[in-house]
Image (cartoon, rainbow over all chains, first blue to last red):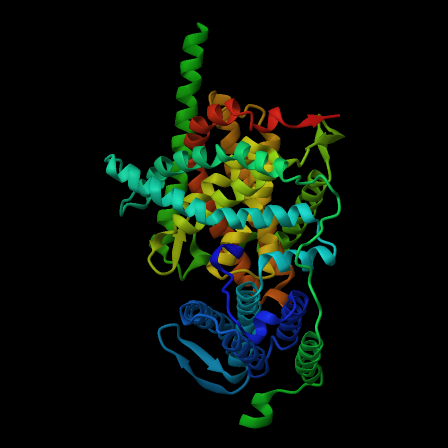
Length: 269
Length: 278
């Protein structure tokens, strides 16, 4: 299973893009979010562009909801923290109940800008790993100079995650069936009970080390310094077009921010 | 006094030290709950950060960051400090080492995700029992275990949707949690009073503080890129990470270490059986 279930197989325009385009997309999102971090009214367009990407990629709604739910928690915390720091600057919009913080337009712009600075790369990363096979991502990263062995360890660990989850589930069930407590409402007891879960899981997982290494030896792992790929990455015309659109869009956002543009001051006020 | 009585007395002292240490951490936890999560500036564990101020901690964090980063790359490139000298260490990075890294990463990342957080204040704050595995993997598997811990944390960040530029700091920060006890504990058997005391000093106190300051410095220095305010980083994040790591590792890791050391050693997977120094 590629990227242990995080990759979702779909026939979409985003899935067909070369892994290198999506990596550059990620960097562009990061750069645009940094440039617009003091102004949520501009960085919101970066967020919208990623949401459009998620829709085009036909990402399952469940996964999208998960990331949006996280985003709401971040939004509340970030806006409150930054609004508190900027409550004496700009026009007062209202007072946040309970926290007793004066919410100003400057505080709101900075708060939302900082929120998008955190959330945009996270959401873009979700888009990247949901639409890109680990095999392709690995090849793209090797091409830009990352050591293959390190990336392989990463991929192997991800590939072993479902087995790890199964081990945890089995050990939980076995220990419960033996009458050994593994859960409690008391936090300290729960911490102590975790020992009866961790020990069997670690011993079982570590017993795989020799088996796994024999498999790797048998397949000639590390025999050749240069790794070859059965399905090499191929750059198409669609990748060039997509890259031009992405560079123009995020480049425009960065240029507008450098020029001092703000959607809020240009449109709302 | 006979050696048997001396040993018993040493164990008794060790247990008292461990109990006092855990009691102190429990007291810090109760202090946080009673004063409220919304008042981090009043917590007992935050007082050193409040008293010394952001600038001092930024300088201390910067020094620890440079030291941690240099050690991280030095160790991975095959150099280490031994007996006060810079020496070559031969980690083969063969399929066995690769398997150790992958399996420790899968167990650590899986444990962080599978065991979930234990809520201290439901919906706001939790502690993770899986954090106890980080120093343990360093002590048992050495550099491959520490690298596995770092990768595991990165994977857990990706699975929970928190992967960002900050995760790069978390990557090396978690490596440090595993690296410090591996490198500085002289007796790693968890079978003598000395071993337990060494673990509390290096694996619990030093590793937790170093790792927390390392990540906090990264978050603060890159706040224009990451977006977290300095007040949050030093006033909440840093003390909370210290407490979280120290609390879990103080209770669980020595027990796990005592149980797991013999089977890991017997399977020939302990770092001392796999690393050569020149």
